[in-house]
Length: 238
Image 1 (cartoon, one colour):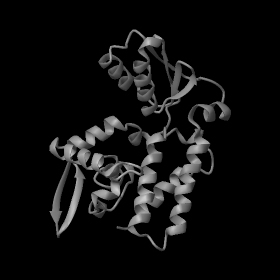
Image 2 (spheres, one colour; image 1 turned 30 degrees about the vertical axis):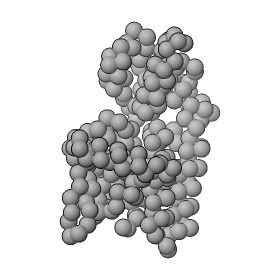
Image 3 (cartoon, helix red, strand yellow; image 1 turned 180 degrees about the vertical axis):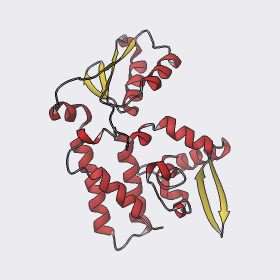
Image 4 (cartoon, one colour; image 1 turned 60 degrees about the vertical axis):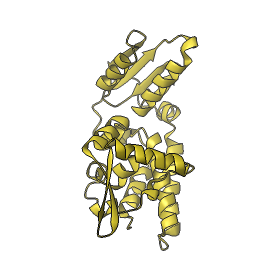
């Protein structure tokens, strides 16, 4: 679904003005790198049956697209995608938790959710995010019955501008290098623009944006190759 969101129907809020013909590409293009095809096709079949995606034939071409339910699911699963162009409101959100060690699986699930919402680890049980995710966290904690073990705070100033702390929590330099590698790959294979090259580029991009916390621009290293990678994906022709 994330591939369809980046390259298909939901492109309006990911890549304004994206050409709708990008929906007319084989479902294999969305196959993530190192992802087993049988498992992938099973997932696609399941999403078709549950109405998250749809497929129809137009002019002998398969048109894959997200349904309204699919768009809602993508938004819930990857909320950061909607925030990448929003201006920071100046508030930090802190999640502080104390979960007993014998419930490691619960802590791991909580950490994964925090990372999905753009949080970075400040200390062992303290995570920080610049995104307005209070309601998302509240809903998750109520669902998982963790409200009494996790505190979510908001503060106006967490620390003076400190690039070292920002880098330690979100490892933006490594992320920036991954984006730069995608841009370089595109430049190297630009004239070929073959199916294999596009598959590698799109799969690589999907893998990177899943790890991207989409921090406000003032926290990003310069130049930020994430913007260039986005333009590269937007310029692909199928």
